[in-house]
Amino acid sequence: MVTCVASLAFLGMEARPIEVQVQLSSGVPAFTVVGLPDKAVSESRERVRAALSAIGLALPPKRITVNLSPADLPKEGSHYDLPIALGLLGAMGVLDNETLSQYVVLGELGLDGRLMASPGALPAAIHAASCQSGLICAEALGAEAAWSGLDEIIAAPDLLLLIQHLKGKVALPQPKADIVEIAFNGPDLASVKGQEQARRALEIAAAGGHNMLMCGSPGAGKSLLAACLPGILPPLSNREALEVSMIASVSGMLPQGGLIQQRPFRAPHHSASMAALIGGGQHIKPGEVTLAHLGVLFLDELPEFKRPVLDSLRQPLENGEVSIARAHAHIRFPARVQLIAAMNPCRCGHLDDAALACSRAPKCAAEYQNKISGPLLDRIDIHIDMPPVGAHELMLPEGESSATVKARVMAARHIQSQRYQDYKDGTIRCNAEADGALIEKLTPMDDAARKILMTAVEKMHLSARAYYRLLKVARTIADLDRAETLNQIHISEALSYRHRQPVA
Image (cartoon, rainbow, N blue to C red; front, side, top):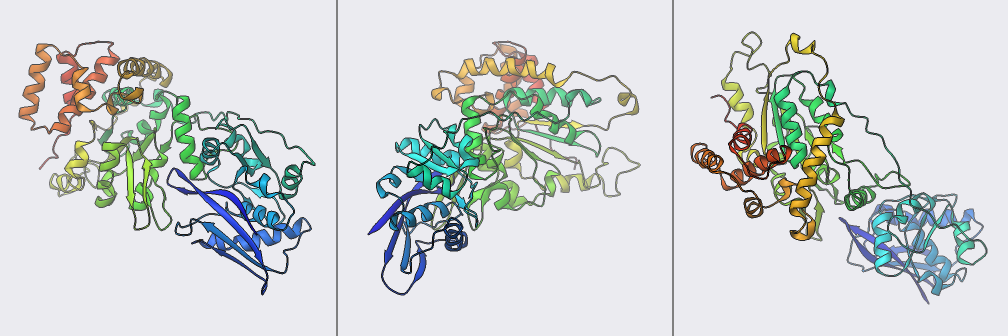
């Protein structure tokens, strides 16, 4: 007789159903796990054996075969411990097989029988709800799984209490979904002295979701401005919070007990590999660009990143997703990020100061900045130069706070949500996410603005992508002014943020 327990394998954000089949047969005592298990799954034999021993049960002296079906799909992770243990208990007659068939099961077992947290509880609960099944998981994952709206979730602290619940001897409480409040601990925009143009550019980037590149000497405030950005972005909607939390759940980074309410802010080091930034590896995992989904990806010292790593960002910045192709799988990760990058004008960083610049200036600036490919720069909407902050500016009083700027950003985002609510099922959140044809259709402009725009396209040799991105930035500037029609001021300001070639 074969006992079957439902579990899951995670391929990207997709939860694939896995059937854990357990058979006890006569022969030389052995415990075998088949079905392309990785090292963590193979080691589950020892954890299951120890957990059963901790509650007073011993494995029968028979041949135990565990098959993870479908057998041609690689199985990774420790969450197969609990379904294997429950399958064994069903095969041993301790638990009723019909009862076990009503649940999707995942969880790691401790040697003392405790149920440990494992990644993927939220997508697992959503999958269980779509299959009209219940979910069995560790107690630490109960509140996370409850956000799926699933009617029956068994969140047990240990294996013994779980067995007693399934046999009807005790009743475990149904977990409740809680909100974990995490206060924003980043700097306030008021702490930025001087750099009025950069502050204005940051506000425009936040209002329209635009990518932004800051170029300036060391100490000009580039990293400080980037750290201020999450404080002026609008909060996540319920739908967005669920998306971000599912990514964190699969990655094992979701705080216990609730959804993520803050927009992600990821700042990988410039030594990050392509797999770390985009995702992949031997066991395909989300990269930094996916962990920053619906938030900010900050790349400091942009030219110091390896060029192939930077060029791998082209697809995510254009399409909002990462596609990873392997021989055994083709996986897509969401990656709708706002890229904020910072760089020095040259390697020494003091191009504009003759007393500090190296002897190779300005030739070194062209070589340094040319490490970034033109197609990547073409996908960055706002380029801003940040001069050093003078002593008189440091003595000035504080400027506008993040709360004041955030109010204007929220007003502009509300205008955009109203504008796009009838297009693409309301999935367009801001101007940066609208396609070129749509932004042109919904962006009226007067004759003076149109003349300036056409002249700029010809004189600056702008690509079609650059033209539409310029139009999106101008549309955002008009939204901040609460103007329906673009005028020459909006177009002129947007043009001031376009990329200029380095000094030759």
